Each structure stands twice: as C-alpha cells, then as structure tokens.
Amino acid sequence: MRTPAANAQLALLLEVAGTPKPGNVDRRRDLEDLRFEHFLAGAVGARDGLEMAANGGAVGAAFERAVAGMAGQRGGNTQFGSLLLLVPLVRAAREELSAPVVEAVCEDTTVADAANFYRAFDHVDVFVDDPPADMEPLDVRRGSDAVPAVEDRGLTLLDIMSRSVPGDDVAREWIEGFERSFRAAERLAAADGPLGDRTAAVFLAELAERPDTLVANRSGEAVAQEVADRAAELVERDALETDPDAVEAFAEELVARGVNPGTTADIAAAGLFVALEREAIDV
Image (cartoon, rainbow, N blue to C red; front, side, top):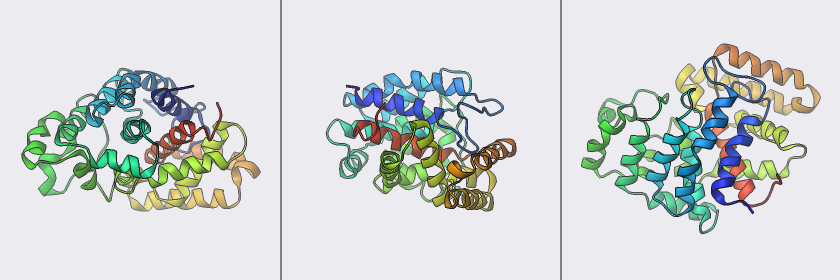
C-alpha cells in the first residue's frame, strides 16, 4: 500500500503523463525551455518535502523543502502550484482526507509557515502578477527578503492565500476547501479508460468550466475566457472521443501561442492525489 507521500509523487507523474493537455507539457509535447523530463525530475525531487508533510511536519517547512527539491532540475518551475495544493492535502491525509480536515490544516498555519512559503520563492522563478501598491512589501517575488514584512504584520500562510484571491485559483482552493480538487477526483473516478486519457478529460473539463488564472495573469482575461470557451466547445461535443485530432490541434496551438493553463494542471494533480489516496482509481 502506498503512503500519502508516494501517492502525491505518483499524482505529479500521472498529471504530466496525461495527454493531450492543451498548452501544457505532457508526454507528447514540450515547451521551449521546459520539457517532460524536467517534470519527472521535479516530482522525484519533491519527495522529501512530501514526506515531511506526511509525517506531520509544518506545512510551510514541508512546502519549502518540496520546492527546493523540485527545483533541482534545470527546467525551472515545474510543479510549484501543484505542491502548494498537495502539501496540505498530504498533511490532512494523516487524519482524514476530507474538506473539513484540509480546511483545518490551512486554518492552523502560522506566521512561520508563511515565512517558509516566501523562502520557497528563493529556489525557483514563479510567474506572478504585480501586487497592489499597498502589498508591495509582501510581493512574493521578493522571496525571503519579504519575510520581515510578513512577520511584522503577523500574517499566517492562510492570510497570504486569502490576499491572493481573486487572481490565483490555487490560493482560492485554500480558501474554498479545495472544492475543485475534490471535484476533479470524483470526475477521475467516474471516467472510463486508461488513466492518462481520464486525466486529459478531467483537465479539459476543468479548463472549460473556469478560465485559467495563470493564463489570465500572463495573457489577459480575454484570452483566458477564449481558451475556456474553446475547451467547453470540445467538451460539449465529446471531442476527445469523437474528434481527438481537434483536441490535439488545440493543444499544439496553445503551445505555439505560449498560452499555458498551468493552474488547471495543478488542480488535476491535486485531484489525482485525492483519487489515489481514496483508492478511487487503480494504478
């Protein structure tokens, strides 16, 4: 029987192996500077931090350790957002993997957890939008240099996540009880076929339902809505089954345009973990 840390690592590997996932690295397509093997190496490197969470370690310290390990490959940021979802889920799995328990894990985070979250940005470049002027001292791109401001204001990691909503749907999961992550797990369990195909189907369904916030921050809200609308049209006509070439073409087009729905991939990874941990899918 796999441990929660092993299931989290497996979820990262299964997420990147699913194909097609329009605009994202998968086993059939790379981005210009970010390749499939970087994601495999990132999942391996994250294991120590995931083990810390599984063994009851503080969320912030476990996350910082996971990101430091993930960053050991040469591609850059592969799974930062996924780990920000997985670490509290793995921590919750010590007791019970449910929305109330993971909410309690997030509510129990401390100023020290927030400080370690900021230190994680020292390990890897992560795309984030410019903060409001009054939040400049708390700009995550400052990394550990922002820790004194975090400590002076007494902000917990949950406080930091709250200040990131709207605009970041990974942070929104922290605030809304990981609603999309649990829903993605249910969709994976209900789907048929090989798990790689199910992962692609769930990714497309999640992309169709909500514009990806990474796309919105990088390319604008209009592009994010366009991508969601096109994904919805493909889901509406069950294109993964009836017209797979159309989905492949969509995937290639987004890669060529540099449009990367990475937040949706993070949700898929979290859903895979929940489904694996609940033994709702078999591997």
